[in-house]
Amino acid sequence: MNRRYLIGMSLMTAVLMLAGCGQKREAVIMAGSTAFQPFAEKLADQFMVQNPGINVTVQGGGSAVGIQSALSRTAQIGMADLLQLPEEAKNLTATEVARDGIAIVVNPGNKVEGLTVQQVREIFNGVINNWKQVGGDDRPITVVSREAGSGTRTSFEQIVGDISLAREALIQDSNGTIRETVANDANAIGYLSHGLINEKIKPVKLDGVECTTEEVVCGKYLLVRPVFLLTQGQPEGAVKQVIDYMLSAEGQETIKNSGLIPVK
Amino acid sequence: MKFLGEKGVRRVLAGIAFSAISALLLIALFIIKEGLPFIISYGPIKFLLSSDWQPQAGKFGIWPMIVASVWVTLGAMLVGAPLGVACAVFLTEFVPRRVMGVIKPTIELLAGIPSVVYGFMGVMVLAPLIRSQLGGPGLSVLAGAVILGVMILPTIISISIDSIQSVPNSYREGSLALGATHWQTTYMVTVPAAKSGIIAAIILGMGRAIGETMAVIMVAGNAVKIPISALDSVRTLTANIALEMGYATGQHRQALFATGVVLLVIIMILNSLAGMSIRKKAGKR
Image (cartoon, rainbow over all chains, first blue to last red):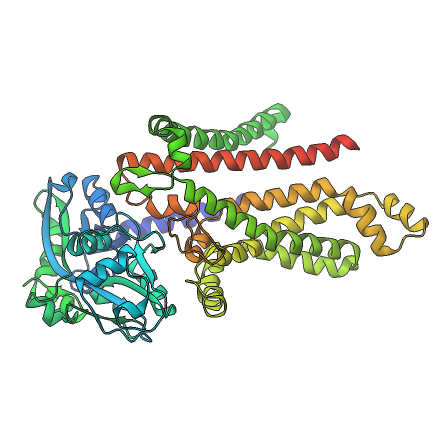
């Protein structure tokens, strides 16, 4: 009885393994930035419809993970959305596929419509800690930031400059949880990828400029960082096909329609 | 299995058992190897007692995280211990065996709920409630303590039940025969007799609360500061490791391993306290 069960199991395993071998699909793994991840997934789906022979897997982890996995070759393509690539990424080939605005967001119930860069800096430094100081209601400000090392946080702090984050700041570990926290807390302020804005949160104007695709393209909006795809050496084969697709007119159109800023 | 023979089976089982133990040893050794040199080179006192955690600036002080872990865990004990022990006493002494056969598995099911689900409940229900009723950001020591308090209930309840059930019936019979009521018997005879088991249950629950990560990351807010009130947001030791592991390189990475060493030591102390408490009971009898 037991033995028959065992034989059955091993047969099934063998069949499954064979089935796996039947279709030979080339695999491309992309890993990194959580901000670009949803867009990469969308692009990968479209790409796979057109190229059934190539299987593209998209993983998150953050920009630093993107650089590390491209270096260690655990992923063929690393995704990083940093203003400046760090020293260790010098030997990687970086291809810019999109640009991404960082929106300053507050709860939709908040009266504040716009902030200056100076105000943003002081809010995140904890100097300004009440909404009435920037034209809102008399309520404390809950600052929400990302964990140290995040691409979004690094770019945000580099562009705004002189930020030493307030100790009271809440730390959330992805763009998605920042959105949830700001959506749920009437006093919160946070920042996230422009492509991830939805009706649950409200982006504020920065120095009077709204965070929209148009303003970013014409260079008026300040908080913009590039999205890089990192590869070891020049991309070739399936990897090149994937990157070329993202840079093609169709890929760039998708990027634009999803809320990111095309590079071409 | 017959072809192995008595001795063969014993050896195979011993081998399997030791592989489990060696996994534990290897983990401990690895964490210590990665973390200890950092603690020594950075200075143990500076590492443990400084309250500046700024990895980018090369400042690694985990005092706020230690304080946070202690507060959240104590809070969880305040919520979980009375509830758990009361529940165990009620289930063993005041409820027919048949009913308990239904309730106990149900409570143990609590242990099977993944911690993300607890965290999700905390973020969606508890934190907004705290924010609107008590103020503060909502993601706080209080939210963490309540969620962890519920999470450790199954541990506390099932170990307490076992220890109360193991009190010989002659104790209860003797007390009742002397004219004590059912409640007097319970709180003056049965519970004191099971005391060391109950204490072990609470300590093991505490170990679980300190070690929990996912739910705490979601509900405690993760701000690196020493909490002044229960409504402040905090980052526990476990959350510190999990949040920054993905990014950390070099010294930062070592500092996170060192945080792991501190956790490991705390948990080992708690577990040996629990073990001592159980052994004391065994020795008495």
